[in-house]
Image (cartoon, rainbow, N blue to C red):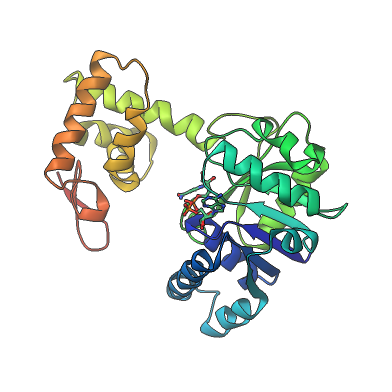
Length: 291
Ligand code: NAD
């Protein structure tokens, strides 16, 4: 595998394209028009500077060599036809994903592997749109991919399992830590574990059972984990936690009570680590100082 096409060069697509090119692959980053490509070029600058600053094994020269392997295009058919692997990171919207995949899948070569970075949809919901469901699966990155470098690889029931192994090698080549799923699971591995864990912590607070300090202290001390659930929520950002909670159709009394607590905190500007204050207070290096 040598040539990788990334569809959508937004927050995640730009990170995937840049990291993949810096790690030695020829990358074409596609987006819908010149304006979107210009925004992506700015992201490459920002993310590139961060990579050099934050990674010991990427120098300014490595970044420049990666940038030289990275091209941008608005021609989806040509970008797809030329790829050994296509990674799609267009907006999290089923219609858009189906539309983009119908074009890219039709233009892709016989051997091209087709991967989606979807967070909340399942590959089986749009595998047919690719025209090659047996070569289609999810390759899911986490934001800030060069540091939070887990890559979850998830086939749907119609994926040929050999592509899971091929993507495992690719993920390793671009310095990700691959995690293989054997079947489809909403939320992959991480969110299947994390969401109920955070929900339980929210329940304990909303019902007046224990304070955030005591919940987190208990979890850290009893398991050896570096962070408890409230610190994790501060890291995710309380606006995101609030937005996820708002999606629940019939919230229970404790879910509504927790939602209210979050609304008050957000109104006070306590939105988590990015503001230095959430359930806890943080210093400039994001270390927890106190409540
Ligand atoms: P984003 O909005 O930053 O980027 C989407 C890109 O797709 C934009 O550059 C946009 O121009 C382009 N695009 C292509 N076709 C489009 C169309 N028809 N209409 C509008 N825009 C179009 O989104 P993102 O945060 O990079 O997310 C992309 C995918 O990655 C989603 O599936 C999301 O679930 C997934 N993801 C996001 C994160 C995250 O933290 N942001 C983490 C993991 C996975």
